[in-house]
Length: 282
Image 1 (cartoon, one colour):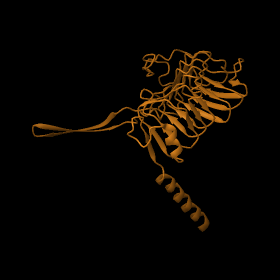
Image 2 (cartoon, rainbow, N blue to C red):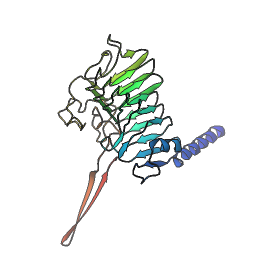
Image 3 (spheres, rainbow, N blue to C red):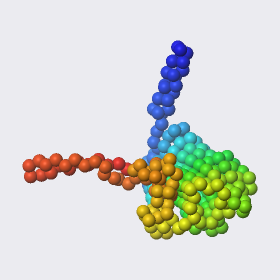
Image 4 (spheres, rainbow, N blue to C red):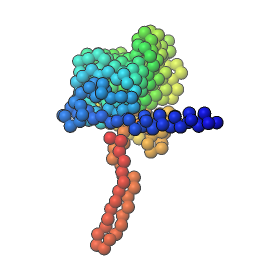
């Protein structure tokens, strides 16, 4: 019993140590943060840190190979783009609230880690590709890429949930042509997602193949009339407690703009005091 208690205390101390030493590092292309380069911030960061990228277009080839969160300020505001293929090479960590594009080929090469609530748009090649390892993609919009939306080469395993993969050049989701999500040894597990053209159709639980009805070609909000509304995985709720939507604005990590959730109104003579509480993810 004493040994078990000792282990328990050590475990708590280790957990507290990890919490105490996690940092938020600010990247601002205009110079108001600790770094102007995303790669420089990643190199300086340690495990469990958050690298927060402020608005701007960052023309660099990013390598995310640490267990940290690389967080943008929304796909509308924070863009990683350039003449690179891939623009982002990812083997660990989490990518969130960013727009990724490539003028030279693939947007993201994913061999590990999690991509959540990102937009991969306008790549001359494929949006997201894998050739090894395993990665997860949740609530992303992968559109308007010259090659495939998601494709595997020579190996690798991707889990794709609650995504909208549409309007890509060759095919949205690549498979073996016989209905299976296998391609050159790679496998894609696809569920609760919306795709247009795909060479894999077997076992895709909860998937649909209808127009997502975006607000515009560059605004990826969906309205309540969209077939993607409340059609995501039921275990992944939106912040309001409803069933998650497919796409960027769905799931537990979807961006929340400033929203008032509590108001107190107090009359005081000829005036009224108004106090409000709000929350936002951005």
